[in-house]
Amino acid sequence: MNSALDIVLAVLVAVLLLGGAFWMLTSALSMFHARDSLSRVNVLSPATGLGLPMIVLGTFLEHTRVDGFDVATLMKTLFTVVALIIVSSIASNVLARAAYLSGAPVDPRTAPQDLARAPGEGDQVPHSEDR
Amino acid sequence: MTVILWLTIAILSAAILVGLFRVATAPDAASRAVVGDLVFFSAIGIIAVIGLVHESAVSVDATLIASVLGILATVALARILTRGRR
Image 1 (cartoon, rainbow over the protein chains, first blue to last red):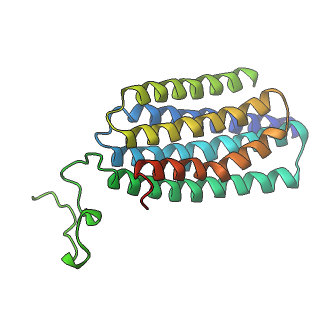
Image 2 (tube, each protein chain N blue to C red):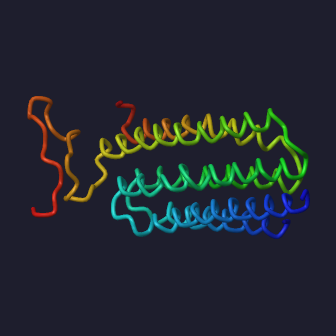
Image 3 (cartoon, rainbow over the protein chains, first blue to last red):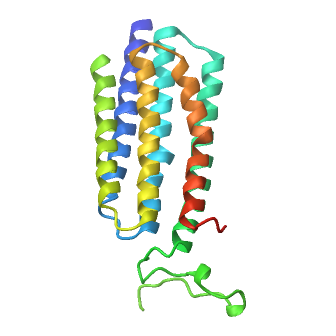
């Protein structure tokens, strides 16, 4: 029973670590396909929102498998995962806003572009395919 | 298990190398900032896995601090991009 659990944990760790690394590499390669910096900010999200939490979770399971369960490590891991998801979302938002304001060229189909409009100008119609 | 750990480190290193190459060929400064962020997060992943290779629990703390304070580097880059404007 104990050795079966050990094998299951080892397989789970391998899947989490390799899967997380796969998302990071996919994200890095997709940086070549994205056309403008706003798309690149979007492409970053799988790496920080899915890939890195998977790696952190995998390291926690491996520490548990080797050294036994530890509440402090569990709390640190949970805090890391939550911080990664929240921090990367806010950081992406700030960076995307700065990227737009810095005047980097964006895809002309990007809509709405409210940052480029005066406050009294009203809302812009979101992008639709029939334009 | 050691093979899997080193394979993970190899994939993450490949992600860093691809990211650095993209930083060198990026068309605008905003893209460089974004890809630099990706390199930073890949380095966090390598730190986490190195902790497993050396069976050291310190890397858990290092990962925690890096993921919480990683926003500072991004916000600083964002401020640089807009020349200090918010």
